[in-house]
Image 1 (tube, one colour):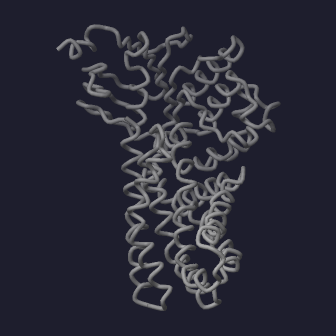
Image 2 (cartoon, one colour):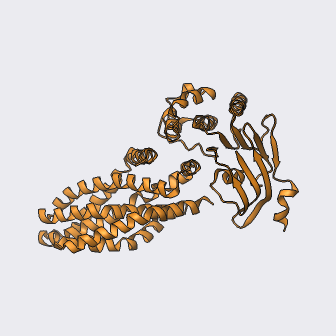
Image 3 (tube, one colour):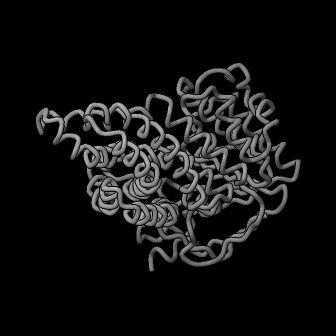
Length: 215
Length: 197
């Protein structure tokens, strides 16, 4: 990996952490996990059965939170202009942002899944499956968030549009992620395939969106 | 170092200027003038490769340093570190102190960028251009927000850059003293003919 790429990743990671930007999705994730028992009722058996799916839905919603600050601030402050002028391709910039976003987003969510699982009274077995699924699925979620962030950068009401754009596209991740909770290795493989496709495609989609946003 | 060959610029379906040709040699300078909205900033962005010309050709392989409206420095960082981010990308990490000194910003090196005034940000952005070590400078309204002393330092920095073989393309609506320049007045009819047609 070239040093400019590492340099860009380090900057985005630093900016994600300052001001608690990386903690916000985690807080949201935990909040959603806490809300479900209130809505469903304190039936431990029922919660244990649907808990894995709740964690997946919570992860999906938490992925929406950082979208608006992934690309738009750097477009507005001219940082993207500067990088492009230096001969960095828009796809490279997007790839660096994707890695930095995953590093800032996924580990905290994976850790937050532990207390959330305790709240929902999940078995260790289910928790392990959720964690493995999230580990495989979060790169895909991060890729979707980045591509969406680049597409809506500069729009008014970007947050709401981003949600409408991202959530339908994330349905395959949700289906295969929640599907893997029944112990199906096949679902995990399909989850990995979807995640891989998203990670491979997102930098180019985001790069094209950034380019289109220049005019 | 930079060649425009019969370049036409279209933004949002509207032709801004057309048939623009000029060549910047080593040590050369071009000053783009004209009223607001005539396409000065678009010309700078064309030269930076951020926009594609609607017609014509832009050639030049020298690395470029771009000064736009925004300073593009991370707000939360101290000035010297914010500049060092770009200098490290340009592999010229040692040049930050000299660039700060050239704009007399050395005293502000430890101040976070968000606390800087408009003029100080402008000087910081110019320091970023100097620190880049790029042979071709593209400056969009470099004199905006600068006081008299800072304007003098900018002119000195440009002269030093040109003496070392660098070239500059400046867009400005405020007078700026530059010896021996190619003057491009975008409001001239020869560039505006396509607009009428």
